[in-house]
Length: 200
Length: 200
Image (cartoon, rainbow over the protein chains, first blue to last red):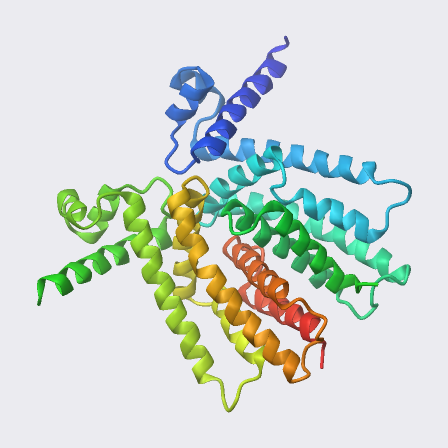
């Protein structure tokens, strides 16, 4: 294997070890040493790939966000025929809820990252990065809905897009806390879309 | 001071030290020893009041939730005349956003707690506890709005109440991550209430 590919593959293996810890016992207080042990390598070897916990978290988060984005893309492509804007939005938003083990893992890593990002401007910058793109995509779907006569033209699409993102984020939190069953969160998401698009 | 009062006062002092750490550098990886140092006492003395980090977090969270509930009650009582259901809901929901230092501190402690609670059923039980009461209060306000002709009677009030709670939780997260300015989150909250009640 070429050296660069090997380096990337090792980093992904270490990421996977980090995810396993995130899922089973959480990352709060988990050290580089803990992750090295889970990955079955020495601390020195791990530090060859990641110098700090934040660097490792950042890599793991980017990778898991990439996988999540791929899943959402697949969900949209799997929609039959020419999906309506509402169907596209539902596919994206439900992909942001912890409805299966993969999305749950992503959200657990995200939670560990979040609790550090609120105190670290560099980590925060990363967390902020994906949002405008997602918002713009949602806005484009909402504008398409207005053009198709499926959404009240009086809606402020940028604000509605941010509200949708915030709402799903809050619902995801409550699923992780067992306040909601996953199905309840999905039902609430549909209610939210009902409110936006009108029931009929 | 009677011994019991003294014990409670000491626990509150230690809580305050925990909050200071939560605000300045976060609780991820913060140990009992760190909190003892911040409180200016020995680790042994701290352990006389809290045996574990979770016990300490739980106490600090209950106390901060109590203070938050008191603030919301004051906000409602400060509303002039006979507040409408929408005004009452807005007072509660905006009190759940990090719009000042006190609510920000509460949310930072809550975030540290959250990231542990997703892995610990006992901590989760505590997080779940306040939700039904809050939901029921919101439902009572929404039903009052229906009776006053201010809300479409077709709205499922229990689901709308949970959506409001989830939405504000998501918006609060985005303020802590600097995705939204506090004023933006407040504007989005008003948009959300516009959508629910109709613009007027």
